[in-house]
Image (cartoon, rainbow, N blue to C red; front, side, top):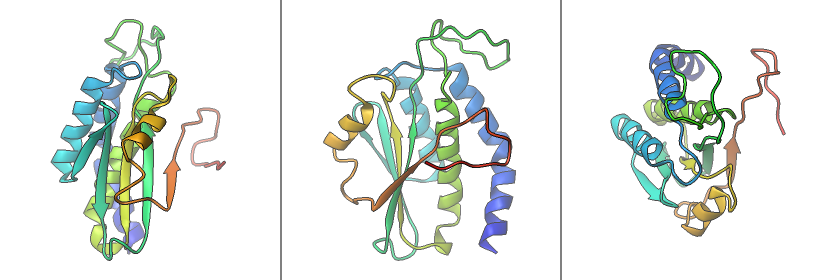
Length: 180
């Protein structure tokens, strides 16, 4: 029953998530300069009804509690920065920021985490534990944004027992997953 509900929510949220991905792709920002991206994420979480905090200046962390929130705590992480690359694609959602592009899929990662957040929040009465959402800045530049968020306490209050992240792999056949 929960599986069908999640599939239904994913399907119904798809048009909105596609718009989010296109917005993020069109407005990329370099590491540690993700100010508008951070504001956009904050607005999305606020609309969903998920409390959040800011870490490492542009990083965002949110909390979704299911039943029995202390039973298990996991984190889901997405990176939010872009690369200093001039986009050559000719698509309606092409980067409007000269010399900056989401060439590594971080727009997709952020969209996926926002989509997961929406579905998890809408189904929280069906699962136990807490999910911590981590939108990490500065993945492409040293020192990595993860280290700055850790210094700011992202792995505390609550401390996740594990973290799951994703990365797009254009060479992988549609419908397939790979794990590392």
